[in-house]
Length: 255
Image 1: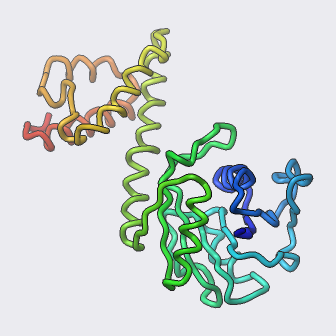
Image 2: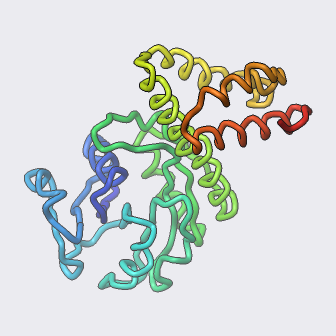
């Protein structure tokens, strides 16, 4: 049985706690947050604390906190030579205080607290400084039912950057699409099968081969019509930028 202390109360921390609680191989012995209120609903199922000096002994301490808090919080831990890992895609493993054994358990997925998630669809990227820590983190990730991949810092850095493009930026485009449809009372829900098919297509095709649309076809009339329809300057600029990018990728001239 792997014993775990979770530090943080955000989306990742909450999903990790809920999934670990279902595992026969992991025991969450404590949950820390600097404010008890966000985790108070779980006080009857796990020991909760807002005091670092009361942290219990555990095999792994998981920092599921904001990126900016990792370095300072790890320096305040009242012990040494324990396995301390964070879940960030962009923070260096060396930001964890050097008096600890250091690692990263990075779930490459988007998390919303109120949306259930199946860790079978969440790749866990594992990074450790010392070789001895890897098997324990691998077993911990396996307990979630998640696929695992051992990576280095550079690979994790570019994966996180790419994730911002394919998730965060894409979601902003969904939001723009929602605003555009709302402007004329059209139903955004009618676009959801297209969104699903676009995501499904790249399971079998490269993004390069999957590209379609007026920009790739260099359909000047349609592009000009779209630009004329867009009233929001920011939306117009984004349309122009992405159209140019697609045309550069597929060998056409800029607008």
